[in-house]
Image (cartoon, rainbow, N blue to C red; front, side, top):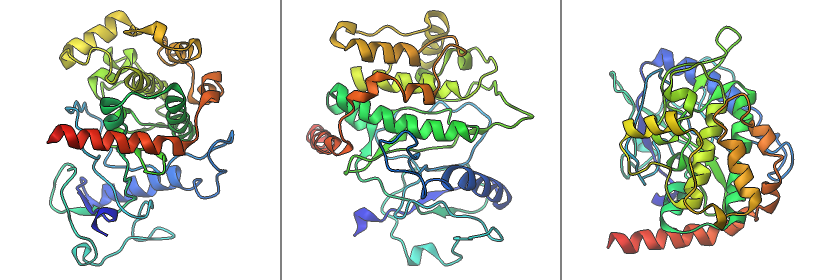
Length: 319
């Protein structure tokens, strides 16, 4: 079926860089997923992750409700020629896959690279937050899955650096997965912090907009903004320009909710722990996974009617 097979064209800087990126990112991000315990346990696995080329430069993209750049049918990251367990095919991809539409693009040098990955048929979380209103139990379910992914990444010293609702994919079964690693950073003993102003303005942490040294907790701030998206349908300062949004983040610190009394005390506290301006005091993904708000999480299958409703509303409004 065409809708279950999507071949996405993603271009990277060079075959040499591809070797470095896929070998190391695939090994670090995917090796533990098969043996990990099922979702809902304390040591739950991270969702399969959809990478693209990492680049140390600012990327401020306009919001889009389309799917991110790399999707496909098997959820596996390819390795590179010469690597153990090589799964790269040298066959002509056009003979196996039908290109339905181009859904993303990298930085073109001289050739295209096809990456075939799992197709998330539920679309993005952005569609959900813009078309429907989520219950707190549904927010808690999505939050738990995102935090499991972030905890896994951060344990491997990887920072996502562009977490937002359009980079969170959903399956019709309610599965939740992180995507778009075009701005990710791998920390090392020699470089355990970064300072580049990287990401999408409205989701940037205070330490990012001030170009201060930062670590993995910038993802926690961005995750807190995603939680506000689930509550209010959009991030704070969304109607402001990107430059003004950065200035307000720098100036105001923790954003104010529009209707805080509408939220439970647990959700308000959960947001405060995520959106602490002081990076040292901000909770980690592992700590947030123990927050009592997540105990209200509904089963992931409860997201299916929400996804269906959001898709229907979106199609109606397009007409």
